[in-house]
Image 1 (cartoon, rainbow, N blue to C red):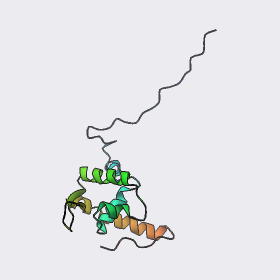
Image 2 (tube, rainbow, N blue to C red):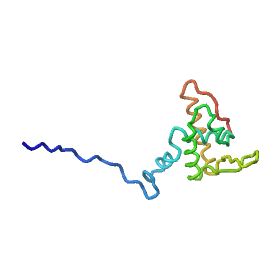
Image 3 (cartoon, one colour):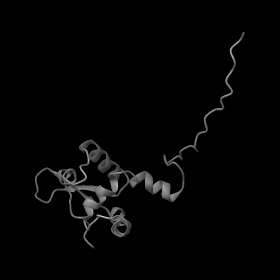
Image 4 (spheres, rainbow, N blue to C red):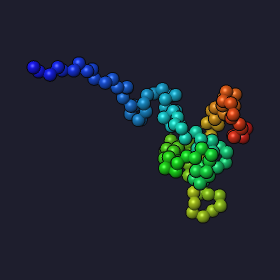
Amino acid sequence: MPAKKSAKKPAKRGPKATEEGRRSPCPVACALDIFGDKWTLLVIRDLMLGRSRFKDFAASPEGIPTNILSDRLERLQDKGLVAQVPATEGGKRMAYALTEKGESLLPILRSIRDWGLKWEPGTGMFMDSK
């Protein structure tokens, strides 16, 4: 007796990525593709707080793994939110600084901070009120 053929339907797939590599043209999705992961906004927060060196980001209380930190800094540079600059103390070491595009995220971070202070018990001020 021949084996029964299964009546499986092909798995549905989402829309194809755009030519720019985006999931969709939705501005929310595009923004989240840049900074919507667990770590990226924390790196941007640290830059806004005046941190600029790799070791400073790695020392943040959240404990970002160094391989992820390297990846996020590279992604932020590729997207034009962060630039490498010479470290202030001279030498050959490099530091990171927000570009104008990166600095434009400050109101978003303030809103997230304010939401967390209002709705998440046990949170406290970490970002200054620039």
